[in-house]
Image 1 (cartoon, rainbow, N blue to C red):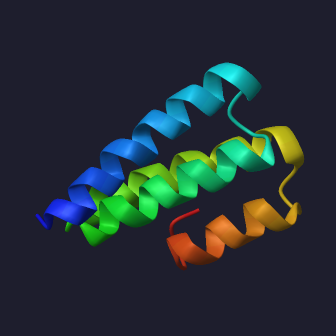
Image 2: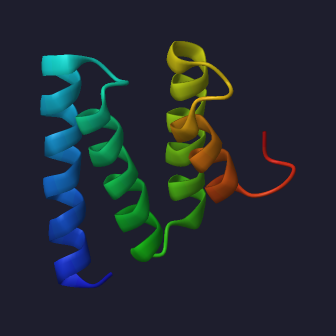
Length: 84
């Protein structure tokens, strides 16, 4: 794993935890941090881990914001067809 990616992943994970405690799992700041963590997870080579993170983000967006919210739709488009 690239050292810079690993460090970025650790920092992103800390940011997600802090924002989740502060705001909950769905506010814009938390979703952005969770998405960054998913991207870094994929960049580190852990594609399954990234897919799981995206899936959780999508489920939370749908549950709290509705299936037709733009964030839920965006996450579904990242997950790909057939993964809903």
